[in-house]
Amino acid sequence: MGTGPIVIVLASGRGERFVASGGTGSKLQARLDGCTVLERTLMAVHASGLPWHLETATHPGLGDSIAAGVRATADAAAWLILPGDLPLIQASTLRHIAQAPMSLDVVVPVVKGWQRGHPVRFSARCGSELMQLSGPEDGAAIEQARNATLWPVQDPGCIVDIDTLQDLQQARQLLAMNKPFQQY
Image: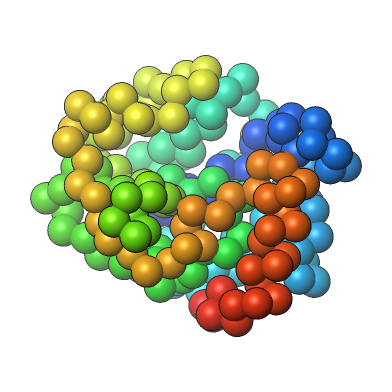
């Protein structure tokens, strides 16, 4: 396949849980350490040096967003599916997942040996299945059917997503306490 692994940053969700938890507006536009949640995520993606695609169009569900991102980058050798609400992800983690052997169909980062994180990398062999996702489907069925490989990482930022106002406050505390999160 063509271009090598591409990071697809998903930024088209409605963030309903964030608003329901007391947040105002989009969780991706919430302020975190001087910039927005999405800007922090994109800083790590940019620092990784990997090509990327930002999927911001409105879609009915997560599966539709993933499918649109994969269709837009159909010549990729693999896709790293990264929700835009992971502002503590490290660039080194993105590179580590991208560099996993291409013989593996699905690579899932895990922290502490059991906590699954993001981005999940799908090889080009999964392209047609990813393009057929719709509604709330997130690729878990593809992970299971393709016997996903769990790939150890040392980055708790790959499991800290912002779904609620409490999550945002936790991310602020982690940033204040743990400066390694700020390394890209």
